[in-house]
Length: 325
Image 1 (cartoon, helix red, strand yellow):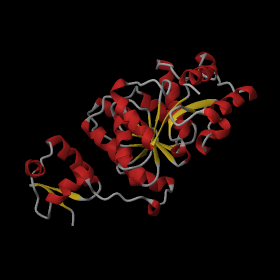
Image 2 (cartoon, one colour; image 1 turned 90 degrees about the horizontal axis):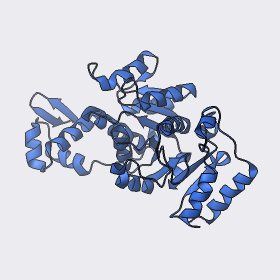
Image 3 (cartoon, rainbow, N blue to C red; image 1 turned 90 degrees about the vertical axis):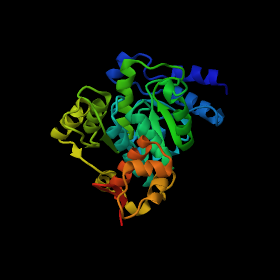
Image 4 (cartoon, rainbow, N blue to C red; image 1 turned 45 degrees about the horizontal axis):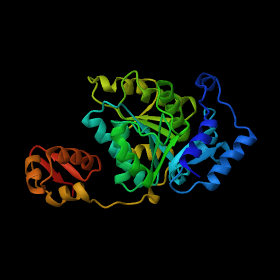
C-alpha cells in the first residue's frame, strides 16, 4: 500500500480533525473504522506506518481516560509494551539540565525501561540520545504526523529513534504541528508512561503540563532539582512544593516504581567514558590534563565527568578528578 493511500486512511481516522470536539471528549472509532485500520496494517510493509486502536494499546495507555482513539507509529512498536518512563523538560536547557536528562535516560534504558519524550530540541533530544547510547529503547511522541519531521534539527535523531523504538502520534500522517497539538502530545506522553520525570522546567512550560496530566491520571511524578536562582528551574521547584518526589539519581525512580535492578542490562564503560577512565587513577588529574591525554574537547570531558561522578566511578578532588577505588 502506498504512503499516499496511508495518508488518506489516516486523515479519515484523525481523532483531532475537529480539535475543539476532541478537547471535550475524543470520539470512539466505529467498527467500520476499526476494520479500515486493520486492513491498512495487514498490507503495510516495513517502510510504511502502523496504526493502533484502543484494543491494541499497552496497559498504561489502555487504562487512561485521556487515551486517543487511534495512534500512528513509525518504527518498532514493541518498546511501548514494556515499562515506560517519560522524561520531559525545557527546550532552552542548560548544560546541567542536558547532562541530567542524558544520565537518567541512559540508566533507565539499561534497566530495560522504554524512555519516552517529546522529540523536541533541548531536554527531549538529550533524553532520546541517552537511551540510544545505552543501547536501549526510546519513543518520541510528536505533535504532528509521524511522517512530518519537526523540528528539522532532529531529522537524523528521529531516524536513530526508529532503529531502537518508534515515533508515535495521535495525528494524521502529513499533519503539521500546532499549539493545541502540543497540549495533546503532552497528555499522550503522560498516558503512555508509568511515571514522568521532570528535569528542567520553567513555571509555564509543556513539561509542567505533562506533569499535571500525569498526576491527574495517578502516575508518579519525579523532579530533579536545580539551582534556585535559575528561571529554568522555577517550575520544577514548584512541582516539588506541590508534592512531587525530589530525586537526584535515576535509581531512586526505579526503586520507587519497583523495577528489579537484577534484570538490568550492563553496559561496560566505552567511548568517551572509557577513554576518561583509562587515564584516571588514585591521583587527581586536572581537567586540562585529561583533555590533553585523551584528545577530547573540554566540553566532552566535563559532561562525561559529571555523569561518571553521578555513577560513583570518579571522585572530585581539589586537584581535579580521580578514579573511585
